Image 1 (tube, helix red, strand yellow):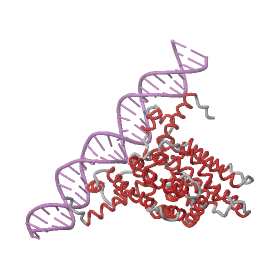
Image 2 (cartoon, chains in turn blue, yellow, cyan, purple):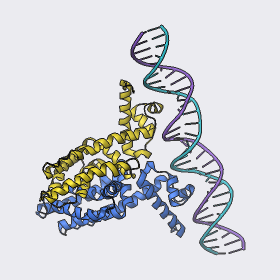
Image 3 (cartoon, chains in turn yellow, orange, brown, green):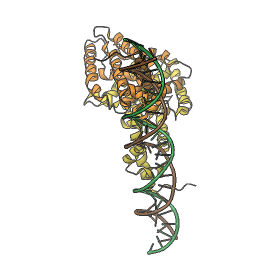
Image 4 (cartoon, protein in one colour):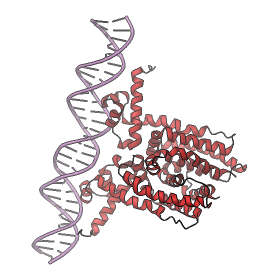
Length: 200
Length: 200
DNA sequence: CCTGCCTTTGACCAGTTGGTCAAATTATTG
DNA sequence: CAATAATTTGACCAACTGGTCAAAGGCAGG
C-alpha cells in the first residue's frame, strides 16, 4: 500500500519530468546528463536521484507517459464516420500534437532514430496491432469505393510523416519560412493532400 | 602544397568516416564516443586522432560531405520540365536516398532535431535561398494553371517528410510492415499523393 | 641494410559522468 | 514543542570521456 504523494513530491517529480523532457528530447538519452536535467529542474543531482532511481528511470517514465498519448489519437478514429473526415481529423489531431507538444514528438523521434531500444516491443506489439486494425477499416472503405485505392499502411505512415515533421524538423522549417508561422499553412496543405489522395 | 594522401591514409580516413557515420547517425554527436567510432573503424583511439584532430572534426567532416549531396537533388529540378513529372522525380530522388543512404538521413535528422547547432547558418542561408528559388518556379506553375494551387513551401516540406520518414523511422516502419519491404509500396503511394495534390 | 618518414600504440591526464551516503536541514504530526 | 519522517546537500567514488605524448614499429627510397 503506497502512500499518496505529498505536495512537494508531486511538485518535484513534475519538475524533473518536465526538465527531463526538455533535455532528453534535445540530446537523446545518451547525449543527456543528469546535471543538465538537475539544473533545468532547479534541483541538485543527488536530489534528483532521491525521486528517481536513475537516469534511466526518468527517461523510461517519460517514454511510458508519452506512449499513452501517442497511440490515443489513432484509437479515436471512428470506423462508422465519413472516411475522409475521419482520416483528416486524425491527421489534424497529430498536427495539433506537433504544435503543442513538440518536445514529446522529438523525444519519440530520438528514440526511434536510435533504433527504439526501449520501445521496440511496443512497436512490434501494441502499435502494430492497432495499425493492423485501422488498416482493416481503411481497406473496407476502399472496397466500398468510399475512398480511392490506397495502401492503408503507407497512408498512415504519410500522416505520421507529414505531421511530425513540423515538430521534429521545426528548426529547419522555421529557417525557411522566416517569420511565417508553419502551422498556419500546414493544416490547409494537409487537408489538400489527403483530399486529393482519398476523394474518389 | 599538400602532399596527396597515401593509400593507407585514404583507407583509414574512409574507415573512420564510415564508422563515424554509423555511430553518429545512431546516437547523435553528444551521445557518441570516440571509442565507439574507433572500435567500429577497427583502429585504436589515438590512431583515430592521428587522422582527425578531434571528435568534432570527424563529425563536421561528415556533415559537410552530407550537405553537398543533400541539396543536390533539389538543384536538379528543371523549371522547363513538366511540373508534376519534375516534382515527382525530385521526390523519387529523395526516396532513393532514404533507401540507399539511411545513415546519412539519420545523421541529418539527429542534427536538426538537436537544434542544428552546427548547420544553422546553412539552413538560414544556402538552403533557404535554394528553396525560395524553387518556390518561385512552383508559384509560376500555379499561376499558369499547370498544377493546382498549392503552397510551394509546404509542398517541399511534405516531400521531405514523406521520403525521409522511411529512413529516419525505419525501425517503426519495419515493425509495422513485418516482412514487407517498405520501399515497394512507398514509391507508388508517393506518386498517388503528389498526383492527387497537384494534377489540376 | 640504413636512413628518414609515416603510422601505431600504451601509458597517461584532467574533466565529466552516473550514482552513493551519511549528515544536515526542513516539514509534519502527535 | 518534541519527535518522527521527509527532504536536501556536500563530499565522495569508480568508470568513462576526449585528448596528449613519447616511444616503438613499419615501410619507403637510396
